[in-house]
Length: 218
Image (cartoon, rainbow, N blue to C red; front, side):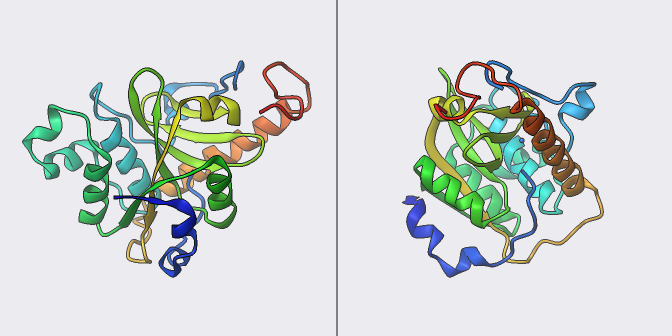
């Protein structure tokens, strides 16, 4: 069941287990420069055309200190997982099978910004640019949206660009302190990628460019 994000923001259960921010230009469409390894730092890449949901869940779990492969998640879901795209309900079941409570919500842009102002957990977002796709939201504010995308890698989008394709559906997680660091370095990697993206974005914002990046119009 998809709930309203406003209601979930008031739930005490979401105030527990905040493990630290783990969350990835318009006409710039900025991505980290360099090799593919840098662009996908801390991200579990999707291996199938339709496996973005499982890769997104694996990316979030890795950021919470519980590394698991996309293949393991699909195998644990059943044989049909390799034949069809995951649904929102599938993602919730996968999270809960790995000890993480998850909630599907329908959110406004203002509620999304409020969520990331209060919490530092990644979230899974459902977007639609002609076909539906799951991506991982690392952070969102008035100036930019930071994504860790299982297909494209780390990205920074303007709010206008992100909102144009976002369906309003999120999968929020509440680990409840049950997952700890595994020593894999995944959380550190994705946090570092976010830090570099924000640094790069602040530099880009010093020079006005088109598409609403020079104050307002996002």
